[in-house]
Image (tube, rainbow, N blue to C red; front, side):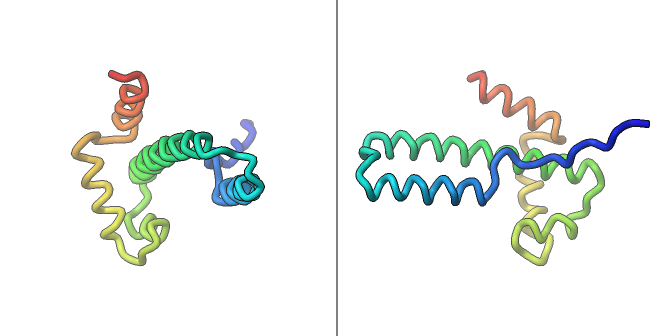
Length: 113
């Protein structure tokens, strides 16, 4: 008999970000972080945000492949109707037909291909 697998978790949570933000805001108020460092952090966060959006797209594709309906997915988009995830899937399908193809696109982007 196989052991149940651990529930997959996002690599970062809203709570993690809020904790980091509160700590960083305190350091900024204390003038412990110079503007140049804040600009570097801004770039890092923007790249991380794009990576999270890409990961979200991959999970959306994978959920559909595993049989999730648009009605099941819609609440995650903050709407009670299916237009938001349907539109996102339509846009993604112009680039990739499935989650494996999307992952390959992300790998290529990452390697600069």
